[in-house]
Amino acid sequence: MYSRSVARANVSLTLAVMVSVVENLAGGTQRMKIQSIETFTKDSLSIVRVRTDDGAEGWGQISPFNADISSIVMHRQVAPHALGKDPADLDVLVDSIIEATYKFPGSYVCRALTGLDTALWDLRGKLEDQSVCELLGGKPRPFSVYGSSMRRDIIPEDEADRLARLRDAKGFDAFKIRVGKVCGHDEDQWPGRTEALVPTVRKAVGDEVSLLVDGNSCYTAQKAIEVGRQVLEPNGVCHFEEPCPYWEIEWTAEVSRALDVPVAGGEQDFSLPQWRRIVDLHAVDIVQPDICYIGGLTRALRVAKMAQEAGMPCVPHSANPSMVTVFTLHLMGAIENAGPYVEYSIEPTSWTAGLFAPTLEVHDGKVDIPDGPGWGVEIDSTWLAATDHQMSELD
Image (cartoon, rainbow, N blue to C red; front, top):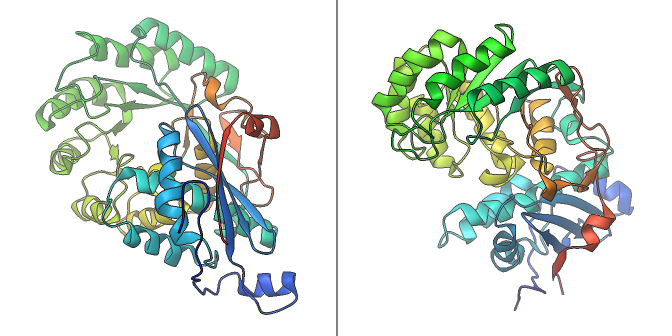
C-alpha cells in the first residue's frame, strides 16, 4: 500500500555503476536502496530530496510550472516504482518507471520523473566527490550563455535598448528575442512587430552579436519560410526556434529544408520515440531537449547522443533560473555536440529567488559550471522551510 504521504515497496533493482563506491563507503557488499523521496513545493517549483537506506542523499527538481500537480504525480506514480530500488543504474530505473506508468503517457510523469532522476545524479556526484559534469567526462569551467528575452509585450526600440545595455554590462555576445505570437496561427503579437523588431535589435547590438529568435509554434510552414527569407536571413539570424507548432514535425522539416538560417526545436518533446522521428527526419538543425520536461538528465543525454550521431548540435531549453539552468550547464560542459551557448533568462523571476547558492552570475558573457560535488549548489534552508512538504518512504 502507498499514499501521497507514505509509500511502501519491497522490490529492488541491481546495478553496477556505483556498487564499488557503495561497498567502500559501507564496508560491505550490501547495495543501497532508495529509502525515501521528499518533495518541497512552493509557487512554481518543487524540489526533491532522495535518501538511501544508508543515509546518503541527493537533491533535484521537478519541472517548473504546475509543480504542485507534478509533485502529486511523483508520490502516486513515480515513488512506488522507485522506493527500495538500487539508485545506481539510472537508465534501468527511469525506463522501468516509464513502462510501469504506460497507462498515463504524457508530460506529467516525465516532469515528476525529472525530480527523481536529477536527485539521483546529485547523490552519485556526492558519493564519488565529483560534479555531475565530471561524472559525464567533462570539466567545470565558464560556459558561454545567450541572453534570452521572454517578452512579446515590449516595443522593438525598448527591447533593442535593454539588450544593448545588457551586452555592455554583462558581456553577452548572443541574444534570443521573441517573434510572432505563441501558437499564433500566422498572426504577429501586433501587426508589423516582427518586421520591425529583428532589424531594430540587430542594429542596436551590432553584427558581432549572435541573434536568435523564437517563434513559439506561431507559423505554418509557408509563413515561417516567408518570415525567414524576408526578415531573419537578411538580418543574420543564426537560430530560428520552434517556427511551427511543435507537434507538426513535417512542417518544421519543410522550413529546415527551405531556409539557410538553422532551425531549432524540441523543448516540448518528452517522448524518446518522437525524438527519434525528429532526428531521423532532420526536422530541425539544432536539438533542444529540456532536461526538466523530458524526464531528467538521463533521458536528455540519450537525445544528445541521437543528435551527435546525426551530426546535429544540442542547445537545450533552459528558460528560467531555477535548477534547470544548473542541470543544463553540467550537461553542456560534457557532451561532444554541445552548441556554443546555454540559454540564460534575462527576466526577473521572484519565484526562484533564494532557491540555491551559489547563484549563477554572468561575467563576460559566461556562467561558471558549478564545480562542487553533484550539482555543486545547496538548496537554501529558508526556502525549504516555507514549502509544502510530502514524503514517500520505504517501510
